[in-house]
Image 1 (spheres, rainbow, N blue to C red):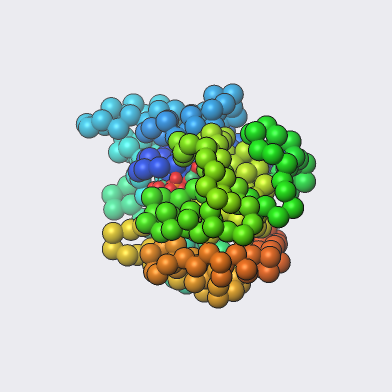
Image 2 (cartoon, rainbow, N blue to C red):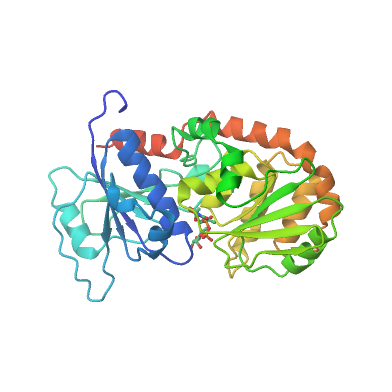
Length: 353
Ligand code: TRH
């Protein structure tokens, strides 16, 4: 199952949980893939295991070794050993004593800073750039996920398609107490940040001529029926099961980075609530993605409105939903034909080890 010509490597991934689930979610997904698909011995050093416990309640069962990264100051890190490959997620910087120990290895480790995902055009130009350490004989490389073939790509497990083919939508609905789907029902999943347009959207859904079933994972919402809208809370699902939810829906509202990528693999129409940044940097990221995505103008208008520019026009958007299936499938197919992020990362490291 391991790639040809490839010796298993040791890898340390460092993750600081800034907020929410994305930092842990991305690191966990990558760690699992490196361990299970490439046979790497992976340790995930994380400063807060709470999000991991929700996304991967069975994480202790292996094959990734999860270690709590104590973040007190002065840093109490007692460097035991270092790894062949060191990945710091989102510029979180490994502990200073660990970095010192990296420099004492006979062969320098490959040190990567795994960056945030963006569709902006500068990303391909910065992917892979190196930054020598000012004092130690170490070089850090910037590894940028992205949509362009010249970037680090997107996380996607090898078994994704097989899992999807084996997915039983009826069994999924039954398990979560959802009635079998009526032919005219629109099933929608909602995972977003608190968003001012939501109450208006809920009203539009309640007034919809066709039934709408809203599935809200981990929301703490109460089940209720308002007009033609049925709100159905779901538990926060383990990461692979979140994919199942996306497959079971006709439309997915996603956010941040990792759920945004999963919605693209699900190849269903989706609406992205981008992670808001104080300096409005997110607007450029949103525009950049919309400029490369083949969705029509109605989807783009709805997305902009969902992200603060205007009022989301549900009836207009709903009318375009059936026509969005094909472009979403084509988009997923194009992206899936390219090597995934773990694959590119492994190649990148092997060329430098
Ligand atoms: O939770 P997010 O908003 O996370 C992040 C962080 O805020 C981070 O600081 C920021 O930089 C980044 O976004 C862009 O959204 P995201 O990235 O979609 O992560 C959610 C994770 O939770 C993802 O791995 C999917 C997972 N998930 C489940 O496993 N089960 C669930 O039921 C749900 C709703 C999500």
